[in-house]
Length: 398
Image (cartoon, rainbow, N blue to C red; front, side, top):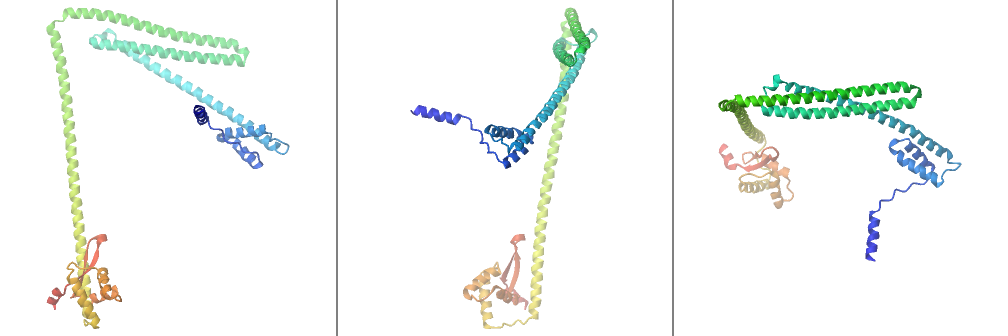
């Protein structure tokens, strides 16, 4: 039982998904389907729905006109399909013609290469090549001739197929032209035979040249082995080795020059980067010094303005409360030699008198510039104003 259940479950999992359900017919859905039938990308889906509606029997006297218009749209799609087919056929013909032209160009270049090999195997040039070079040239020539012959046969086959297609089309369209078709077919066949004959003649000439070259090579080798002595062979090998050593030395010299140029360029780049870092550090230091000078000048101007203002104002205390505040603030700032900002000072005073405000404390400090002074610390976003106790310094100036 378990095996049967597992098999049925596996078959259920492996079966393809069911197609989506077809919507029911309505005038609104019919109007939408008519638009889809005019769209090439949605035609396949729409024609399936139209077929399902007709098979369901949705066609009646009331909906006959709508169905007729949809069937008419389906018929219009036939003309689009025929135009598409004609375009694809034209593209195929153009591709065939392009391939044939490319193959003709390749065959022409093969003929030129084979002609170069044939010219190289003539005695005037052949005697100057070594045995290994002759062997390589002979192998290359044979390979090129085989490829040329294969491409020539392929091109002739394409031309014969085109001529047969043209003859079939002409005979099918107009039977009265059979005589002219036969003449053109015979002419095409004669041309193909002529090309094949030329190809065979070229192959025969190549084989003859190859036989003659083999004979010449055999005789030349026999004469060379008899005429050349061991000393001459050794001298020839020494000259060859000297030439190779000179080439190797020149290549090594060029490589050394390139390496030296590369190392020089790397050193220049390193020196430039070091100079750039030094300039950047100098610029940063100058910026920092300039900011510090600006802060010092700002503090000096602010203190100078306060001193002038304090001289204009009455230096006396208004009440005993102010005297108590001054005593408490002096004690607080005395134990904070680096100063404190107004918020920190105000939070401390709030614990003693909750009614006092930060503005009141700052105004009291500003009235006594010889007892309290304001300084700026930090740079940029960390810039902060701090108050310091300076009565010991200020008493010397009175």
